[in-house]
Picture 1 (tube, rainbow, N blue to C red):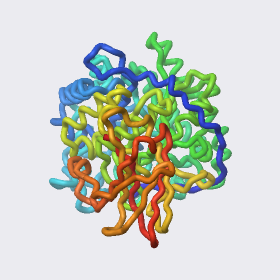
Picture 2: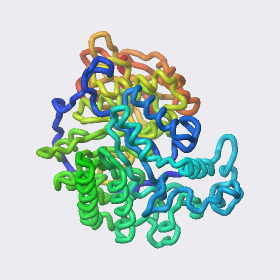
Picture 3: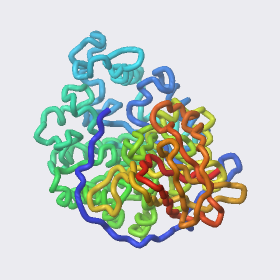
Length: 526
């Protein structure tokens, strides 16, 4: 599916790097009675209805929740909307509104779906609309059932709202679109992805949904997902958005406070925003201002669909939020992209590297998004469950194999100190910085891995110290994750002398006698 590009605006916030290692409250893996760190799992609003988890009956919801609680998540965040809701809302259209159950898939409601995707054994975009209607007809309120199942399994139960979903803008008659989107093309952003929040009617539309879920459901928290999608204002108007969004967040906070009075327990408010504070603020999403005004309890520093960002500046967020009680979680996508080989499903070793780095930098929790896609379907199930189990324990993550790869930065804005992509690199002296967390422990070995054309000679140094090599790196972890496309090319591996490795950031340098193209840079620890 086509995804939006950044508008790439300008300037950069300079913040001293403060390492908040003492704030990492990770414990041992589940099973030894210790408290686990926050492991947040966001479930997309349509995935259950695609049939991923079994028959379209309420009991399948219960089994999904139980299985993931057993695997190791501590919080289940249930996404209930894109442009429509997956439950019978009083203030928004449901996904199935307009569907005629007596007419099959050859009906006007499905006419906007691309030919070949209306029905079939592989692509069946009509089925999730039908499944949502069928579950509703069974008397099941999907969010309510999810929340109740989460509580029975001792999980914290949240609702997550997408604040400007923009799927399928190239097909304006697609049934996923809401009436407000279809009826107001003048409010659509130039990218086509979502609506202009400078319009008071748009903001009110989303406030109506926020208030409804706060009034209707028993929730431990509400997430406003500003990352799926992350454009809210027209180019050149983003600066005006910061004031509007501060007022918007004040009203959202009032809704959660009202829910607290009704329920008799706290209802937290979280926001998911671009991983760099500058990028978020540049697009009207000043999460730091919201936090310092007491409007949020948790900031999820995120990546976008293209790739997980391996270098989210957690310590910058923590420094900006000093003297508040606001926590920071780091979000992982299901995919990874170096900028040279294209997007592919991550492996569990690559995810472990992201998690270790985030927690080492002081993150208060980890947050999985789209884990139900490639990883759930393609990984060996033991890898999936082990990752969720270990994600709550910094020590367990560090003890296992991990990979720290150089990725693109998405979202990205003009004005950031680094480009959105450093690869592919062509030249004779490549310099790359990777955050790897703690040094390898006794018994672990680190190596630098580079994807370069066959038979190209390289000298590699880490922090100025030569790394002997090279050998052909093993890419079985990629194959084991079910990936058969790009990313399986030849890699050279260079052993890292123990004295070369630093805690935190490490500098990789690659020297070649003539121009060479590098498409992948990684430090692996085993």
